[in-house]
Image (cartoon, rainbow, N blue to C red; front, side, top):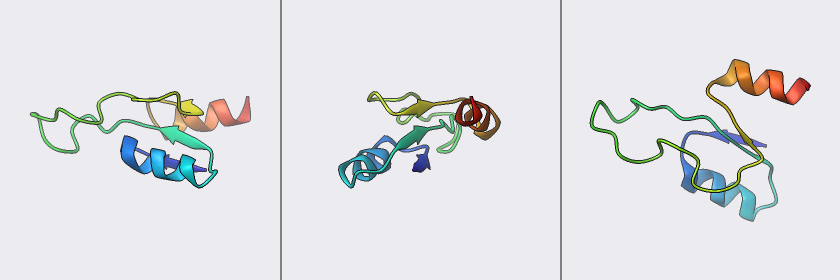
Length: 59
């Protein structure tokens, strides 16, 4: 599984057969960030942070 904040990284991982998890980093590019604010595809998991992702993976 690849956990990433970039939709393009997750698309590449999926193309290789990996599971995917999107966690946004809303201020990675500063206050004017316009990309990677939300999941752009139906990733296997979408979570606000790593704690939430870990809870979903245990579920």
